[in-house]
Amino acid sequence: MNEPQRLDSMSKILLATSTINYMANAVNSVISDYQMIITVNSTPDSPQSESSKKIMSDGLKEKEDFMAEMANKLSGILEEFGDYINGCDMVCAIDMRIYNAPCDILLMGKDLVDHDYDNEEAPFA
Image 1 (tube, helix red, strand yellow):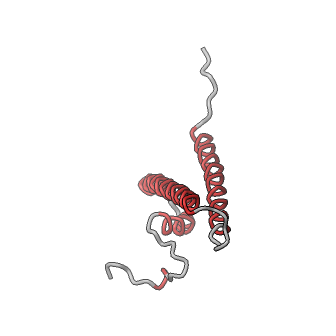
Image 2 (cartoon, rainbow, N blue to C red):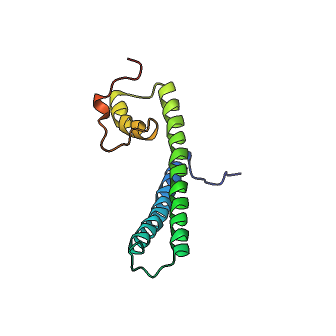
Image 3 (cartoon, rainbow, N blue to C red):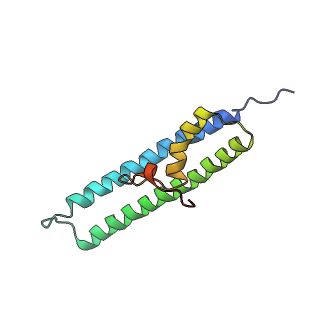
């Protein structure tokens, strides 16, 4: 009896990450809309009530918090993948250069735009 054909793991990973990109873009579009509405309605002559402004602000915060939580969860997956690859000695010099910046940002929190991380002293120096 023939096994039914299924997607392989790599195809499923690509499908998952592409779908996450699409979903994140949808949520981010709503966040942008909320930000624009809040900005427009923050003018003194805005007809929007204070309770309506609060609802919009609370909705924006909830969506931003959700996106931060998803970024944190995905960072955990990135770390697990990296640990596996490193543990199996599947990393070459170019891989390290490619992985370095995303890992610094996502795992080490080095995402302040105006901070010079290159000239930072090592924490245990």
